[in-house]
Image (cartoon, rainbow, N blue to C red; front, side):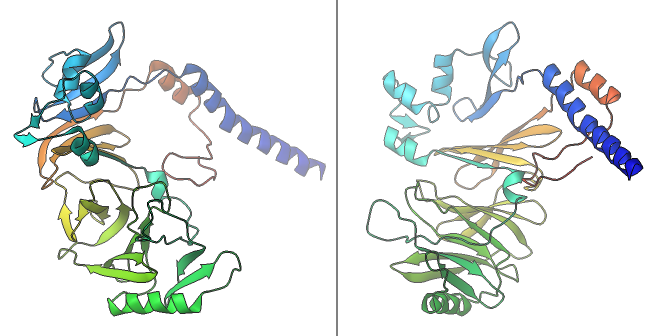
Length: 352
């Protein structure tokens, strides 16, 4: 027993050292990142980079090496710096031949983010379905939640923990009439009242079919969406932007990115592969173009695409910053490391 206790003690001690020593070393030798903020300018037809340069302060430049002041950057990115241009009374009347107003610009602007940890996370399997057309300005959370089973959709009253058989039957019947095969394999929604409107959920059924589900006046609204031949969707992200032009972003098993527009049309975004389970995605969009950033382990890839037909305008790749000398020494001295968390998921488990 004593020998076993000693073995257990030394084992725990070694594990603690393997866990804490590399963490402490990285903590005390860490240096701030010097990454740039990058946006595509349809005025100059180039990417504008804003970042902190050692000994030079904030530097604003394009890929050609031209440097700009902040006021010049405001004019080069009029949709992003709309409020500043309004304050300076420099907001233009037209952009690219299109008459614009601050309200139009702000209505078309959006930002979307998705990270691997959002996908690689445990699922509860219970979802609230808001009323999409209540007649009130403010959205309200429902008193029930729904879940999918192998034979249908079930609504559970949260106060009594009982299944609402009538409502479950109505929604199950509506889904079946549209050709839905239970259970759902992917469910994407934004169940919060802190948004301008509600579009419910986009779903993938057991056979990979794409559907849109929401509640209107207490009744089910279900729409089956035609997917292009040969496309097998894998991950869905509902959007609910102010302009209501898109319903969702989607990726397929080949890591291509798609947009589900309103009305229902699936269009491919003209960028190289994006792996939603391993790479982070950021999209900053406006009336004319989108700047898409795909962040991976080895590089940050930037793409500018047309806001109407999603064709590629330009691209820019930034390799991941080279490891510092201190980091390289740390990996040489402490080659074995134990961690319990990862940027790629939300599970807590040992990782050597």
